[in-house]
Image 1: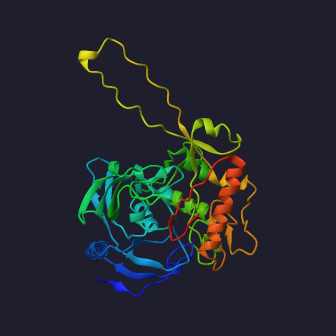
Image 2: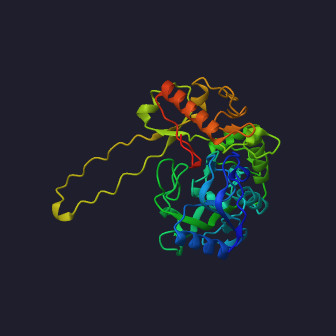
Image 3: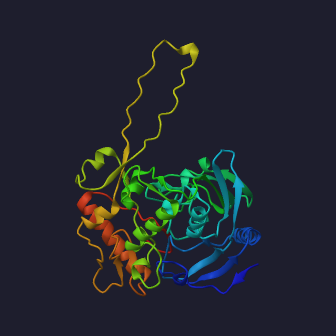
Length: 378
């Protein structure tokens, strides 16, 4: 069993908080990972799987349980049943940005806009990572899961993972348990074989972010380079010399609200329509059909609104910090809470609660945290 001396989570997470666990296991390959998890589950102790540590906010107290670090690596290119596409089967511990770089090198399109997102591939479907109009749900085919309830490995299609805006059936949402307690072993994506020549960008959100005109042709490598530069300007690419990157990325989710509530917000607040669920199929038995078909119900789209805008317009500017606190909003991006130097989890939680309170007072909306919270409350 790959047991190692426990390392404080403050050394393994990008927010740089968290005590040491009681026990730590390092799994370098698929067999070690499966064996480690089955043993931990059989013991019945609290457990946590850890990839890149970029989406975890851990409390100051030691974690009374076992941390399993997923260090598996590897990418296998597979044929696709669709012409012009290729599939990549990727081990869960593989670095996400390294995968994006590989896809660009091979001329494969579908995840380039997600360049620079920290963390591992196995964590990506858990919260349906996305950026600039691309989300992993758009390219995800299936995952291999190890279920806690059975200890068995199964291949699960993307459609069965409950993927939504920064969520899935596997995610530990703040204040609730996941719908399915399982660990991803591998991820299979299907990407378009675009090649290295310049092509127009299809997505408006990405074109706007990069300042590219509709119809203007650019290459995948150009897109990746400029996405990385855009994220660096916001402090969203990890850099040991930049305290603005000592964060969990966007700490609060952009809020999904009803169209009616969105109309109560100032018109300047950035917003994007969210496609509504399709109406269920109406089935009328022939023996009861009288010639009348009820009219379709009009469904208004929900609206996604900018949490960063709400924070700044509640009076909290970039770089804001509470008195004597070592936690602050990023000086580059109002949605990131940063550790400015040995800040405790308590200091970061205090700042998060203060932000929630200000936004609720100004706009009547409670922002929800995006990272997984361990041994800490808001």
